[in-house]
Image 1 (cartoon, each protein chain N blue to C red):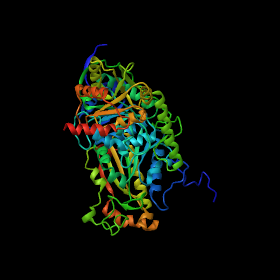
Image 2 (spheres, one colour; image 1 turned 180 degrees about the vertical axis):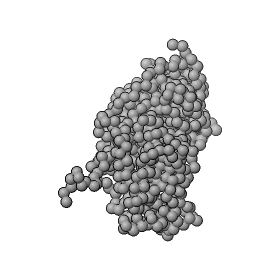
Image 3 (cartoon, one colour; image 1 turned 90 degrees about the horizontal axis):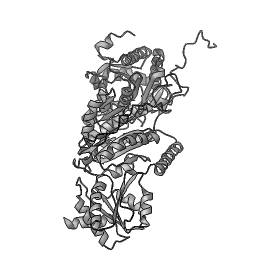
Image 4 (tube, each protein chain N blue to C red; image 1 turned 120 degrees about the vertical axis):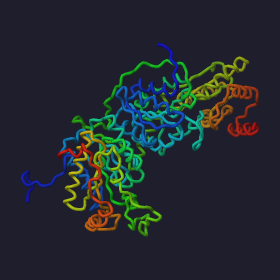
Length: 257
Length: 371
């Protein structure tokens, strides 16, 4: 069938450049990127958006979004975003960070950005391991989960417990909107997109720090097929990292999207 | 213009404000905390940005972000805090954007103490963070000079898309002196053709990053940074000279060590010793050419520092073994008295000086003999 304007059901969002991504087949980074690009496009804010890329698999995020972008040191994206947003308060500033970046080395920066109520939006990809360096244990690695640095499975006695970032950040008064969603099926992807929209709306209205945690896959490092890894998220990750709204401030609760 | 009494730290804070500082990010650490405290009141009063960061890591990365946005931005800290900032400095250097940092140095290594020191010369001048880069480094010797160099720091940082660091020791930071504060300059946000401040319907997107995965691209970047260093070396060397015209001996010292040495040089002149002083104001770029000229007509150098001989190595690099170089240092937060430096000048002027001796080793032996 020839694609025409009448039956066009899928196309590259305006928020994307023409660059094909470097992500592994089956990885949900591509989905997360697309949701962010669609939301920025739908809100008409691409022209005034500045993204902050992390260190991790999404280090090259700046190649894919057709907005201004900077590339932060490992974990420091919320600090860089703070610097940008404070001097350009009318712009839209977001960070895109993985779990090693945000929940380990960048714990100080993310916590204090939330505590200060920085008007930034954080897209937090939780795939339970350090993807870019080849699948090491992350703060979000599940108990018993095998990684290249927990070869016998994460032993909580010696390697500690996973950190539930959304729950933790939700305790901070500066946080306006903190939710966890998942990317393991179409229904959850739609819910994730809605949450991303609400997070950016929170920022646009100056209602404080917003974060959307997205449970994601890492088929390559998990040693699974894409389908198996989606199942792993649904069966194993969602039970440890329950989906839900952890912080919706009064102001955000009144938003209609 | 009336002269006013200002404490060094508060003075550089106000000088930065008057030079058009739009954003400040800092963290408390002695002996620079007064900068943070002063700007916590002053910046909001002017509708400008002030954030007390969660750490020096946070502070320098906020500076990084604001610098990417294209505004005049600065942080200040002291030795241990500046060590934490080295990560961000390296990224800022790799991204080739302007930023200003003041290090009000104290004794180290480690926690050290909070006494005035020049122990971070190497860290400042020779990079400090990872990778090949060359910051511009200024070293004032008085509150007035620190104030005057503040505006220059921003101008140089922007001109060369470089880090400009001012290293001053805790005594300049916390001493009060009568100064002339410069006039308030208006904030002028420039529309840099590199800034990530949003496309705003005017242009293609800007990306600022320090990543060059292709080694050949990184090599090009390294060479570009080196080329910039050479331009800085050619155009921006600044120094103060005292009694050099007929000098037979020359003391070289920066910052407070240079200032103390000036008193000693004056005293030595009164005693008939033909000694002068070279005080580098830019320690990076170092005034190599000036030293090179002096080598041809003097009998010896005495390098005075508040460390164990860090700038000494740069002096020796200029001298290239063609003239004797002697050293006197007080590390650890000890500030030398003019009498001590005078005694050293007399020693140098009256001894048979060697071209071969290692000046630091010889100084170390003298220090140990005194203990």
